Image 1 (cartoon, one colour):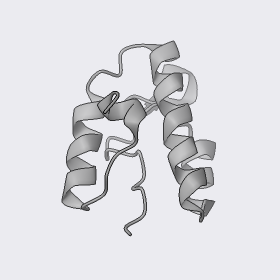
Image 2 (cartoon, one colour; image 1 turned 90 degrees about the vertical axis):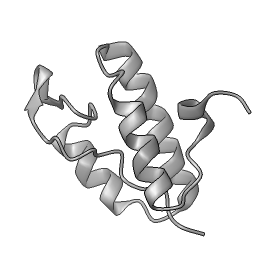
Image 3 (cartoon, one colour; image 1 turned 30 degrees about the horizontal axis):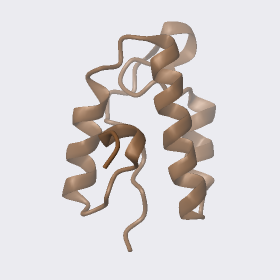
Length: 85
């Protein structure tokens, strides 16, 4: 089974109070995601990030980009991105 890919969508411009305008991660969160080895932790991180994006607002561009990334890597995205099955 392939690992959940990083939520990064290769924008990497840290404005918005230290949050990336592409994915909403901070530099510390980017480092943290790279250290996560367990799949459940990686999926939980992405769920947290979706909630963070909802709170910050203006991240509707992220989900379609991340879904394409998951498709390229042949990984089923978490339900928080795709909605209920």
